[in-house]
Image (tube, rainbow, N blue to C red; front, side, top):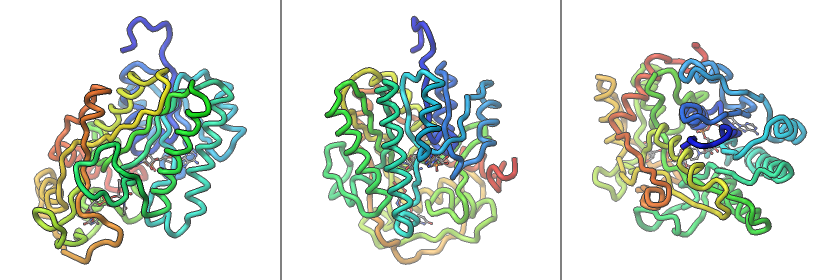
Length: 346
Ligand code: NAD
Ligand code: UD1
């Protein structure tokens, strides 16, 4: 990919110390990109950079900067000539976004406005943005294609949809921009080294980290939110995707869409749906233990089934997920069992 290029492409990864950003940084470095990470460490740990260095042999340049600090972000762009930005930085907890919406809107929207304004000032017109399947709201059918109607049900989701619209308007006003909107389904799993993975603060909200903490003995049992959905076993079905497959999707987006003006939208999912009970069973196999669970009431706001039609990314980007649910659970278990307390232990 980098053959024949005079210099390595230089990529700014905002939120690069976070879960998906750190895995993407590793794959970028492995593929020969020059990577700069910008993160305020609000939901991550600086030790992640040591792990990236251990795994790849290269330590990315790190700016401990908040996107809300316009001058500091501007300074980062003055010190580096970026070819593209992959923009992960943002707050992502749905429940929290309902409790403190202003913080979510300010951080996610104002932070991105600062970033895009500074990019334009420094003539960097390539952005790959972390969107989410949450922008499809309550889809009427599955699989979900990129042209499904968009709607949101909580402030977090609204920030994603607003940012998709803002970035589209930025392109409409200046057709030098290449905007790639990647709508992730449910990222899980960890780096195969067992040194890097998801490290939620407090009690996890999402299924897989919760299951992993039950497996390691930090939590007593899995709360299964409803078994009366219209699904094969009655529990909710989702499109779980290995975080490394997801990371590789960003490299494909860079490869195919850098300097291709337009707004490019892709689902990043596997196209397969797994129920809550499927996930518990797959994790039991991975960890070799029986995992206790209790069926409880549905979680308000949850949908029955959500999975992607992933054809567009395959056709236009030449990308598809290759890691199955077994590998997702094995890698997550390696990370969780090696680091029961996440990065605090390193
Ligand atoms: P994460 O919290 O692990 O990573 C986000 C990173 O951004 C963190 O390291 C945090 O410290 C940083 N950050 C937040 N606000 C910042 C700011 N103002 N300035 C600088 N840094 C800031 O989350 P993740 O799971 O890696 O998600 C990455 C992106 O993907 C987010 O935008 C998220 O909304 C989106 N996304 C995540 C999921 C998921 O399930 N993990 C699904 C769909 C979309
Ligand atoms: C959540 C977010 C969504 C985000 C997505 C990807 C919510 C309401 N939605 O979606 O905005 O885009 O993550 O990260 O948080 N479950 C249990 N027990 C648990 C946790 C979950 O049974 O302890 C079930 C849920 O009901 C659901 C499935 O597991 O059927 C997956 O839940 P979760 O991991 O929270 O992801 P989503 O709800 O799909």
